[in-house]
Image 1 (spheres, one colour):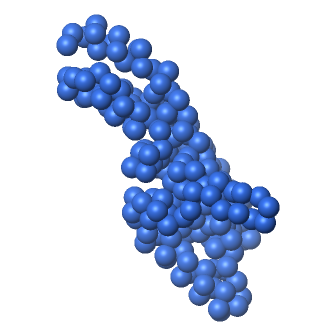
Image 2 (tube, rainbow, N blue to C red; image 1 turned 60 degrees about the horizontal axis):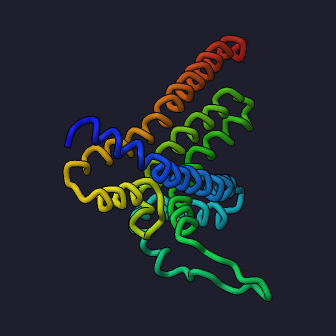
Length: 218
């Protein structure tokens, strides 16, 4: 297969793959939106003056860290129903949402650990140190973004699952490497500039925190 043929095939299937990539973005944002508030609640629980609440917060955080997200995706896919009734209303649980829920468990564990430190800094008046939570959170979003490709194992039509469809439709093993490389490029094009921007923000916050140290000492 010539380079021109490969490029033509990839170009022809780009809209199809782009729709799949939107699913990756949706899953990632949903996982962060679900896991972040849960993680902050766990962090607050771990700072509670009541020992039973602290123990519960510590236990749930440790559990969130322990579950492999890949296994959890399979587990939720088969344990949670596709839909259930809440009174007269039928609520759907599509595969993409189950994948988001599985990934949100890891997010909750991460936010609990990092949010705990951020809350402590904030309460001590160390604003810049507390705000370092934001670049850490953003970098973890990129990790979840990469992990969203595992949703393909339960049939979510994200970019990896659609890449497999393209390979099967073309029917040539010569295209496999290029389709997967093309799918990887989509993640790189989004993740690399975000990572660079987050690193810049983090360096700025660290510099401002260090600049405040002498004034704080005075």
